[in-house]
Image (cartoon, rainbow, N blue to C red):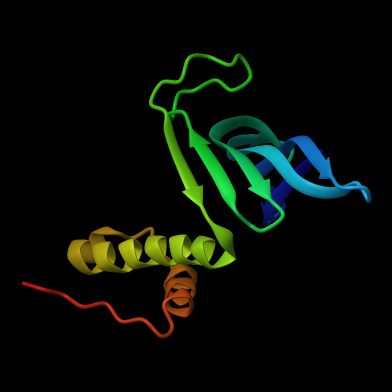
Length: 141
């Protein structure tokens, strides 16, 4: 089973569910294993080339286990891990904190790099501002 995040008719990200795990007498879904990819190119609005990002184990309590194997890892051929990195992100608040971390990094780098970061769109600025509501960026010289 696959899911796509689509923008302007082009899929940007793909979640490829590799396993759904069940538990208990009711056989409720307890966790999901999936790979996530970023689209690199398209033919007729269909992904023709994609880039593996991570293999993820996502539990019912929103605890996640992220396995990053390096930018050139070929998940289809299950190559040796090139640059393995593992992150355990525990619960829904922690995922939001990671999103805030990326917004924080982007806002600070925009300040440091100035107009040279012309890829920082107005929409991105608004999203980052919304993620950082209730937080302030403090600069120490």
